[in-house]
Image (tube, rainbow over all chains, first blue to last red):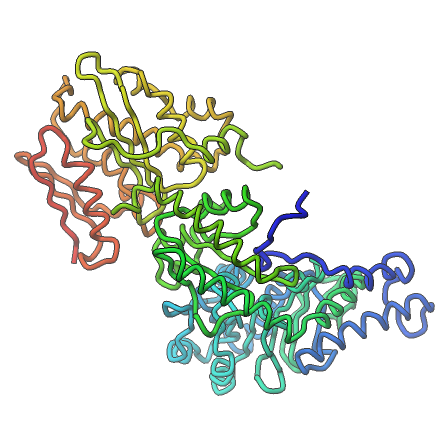
Length: 388
Length: 211
């Protein structure tokens, strides 16, 4: 049914790579035991080794140790664990204050808000018109009470890549823990925990052609953290629950399959669609930074048209894209990210996000712009704003 | 495919009827606000003798629900007298379209309000407001409920942006709780002037910002 669709919403979810599925299969049908201890039975030991290998493989991508990686159900759980876990561990010893940027994704933003309701205070940092956190503002926001700073590596909507090095240095200097949500940047951008003093990192498989429902959290050795899911002793006693071994194996394979060459391909598609949109369609604004952006993300506002109308017309022509328009979301709230970079509702309303993945081709960009050009022209014809 | 929209909504969205402007319309209504998203303009040509809407067009800056409702509303109003057209409701439009998602009601209600505003504009311009009730603070506040607060996407009354309103000798004063140099101040001012300026006994509208 969707064979011919040109899918440009890879930030939401990616198509599973068949090679990932192949390595997962045995862990459903053959080695389906849970990871047992050393003196268990052979199938369980085999499963345990597969889990360890997967952990090792993900850890090595960050230059971390494998015991610093725990598997979770995805980004949401990873960020919840990071924020709530550290907050609970340090609230008596250090204080009750967290810092995040205003344009964080919902798992961080809403977790920080929940902490606010539990007696913590939270500072949400403004960002500049390109989406960058002001480093001076960050410095000033950190107090003796601050237990954690959470600032993403790359933004989910506008793709802006933060200066994580400078941010981590500030946190190190101020002796405060740093969490980064790398859901959209893990494997797409360099991230090395030996080089950067980041303490916790959220990762997910669903953005890199791995299975959905599995993610990981890097926790630097020695980081105070309280487990918030109680049960068994899995994942170094930090995350209870039967291990999702097929998915962990799939996640590791997905990580292995991302190459520098692929990231260059994504970047070429990103640059082409941005260049074409800005040069071929009148009154278009790029959202986010032109240079420091995720290789797979392009986000543009097509002024005087409404995003939901654009996505529906694009769908009718066989393209899947996403928008920050209020009408597109169930909450009827315009994108907090576009609002965060100082955009008004009109700018958020007309924003369209194109995110590329392994199964896109450079020709997809031309086809998408051709369709966009016609759709935007048509919608502008009927828009009372366009003629002003 | 199971979109939250009916096939008929999608058809009207894809090929909306009565799209465009009418040069020198007899009546014009503009609802919604550019800064906060959805906006509909409705234009009508009215036969002065029969009071029948002979031509009707709309423009929309909105989502599928908004465009489809404007399309069906203009279909329903064409050929009807002003009095008949005034009675067209959102519910009727929704039924004609095979249902609209409840969450999108506010997007589509704008089209109905646009039509009513165009009719009211015609009536006010042609001295057809027979009852000619004097404009009161209550009337002012009810009209201001159609001015959006772009900061929230809700109207300026509900979001407590209006500190004070008054009317004296045909001069309306509206005090808005925003600094005059706020990015949305000009858009809000223009919208307020438009909503209140056409009232039969209003000669001037003063919009005052707090700082």
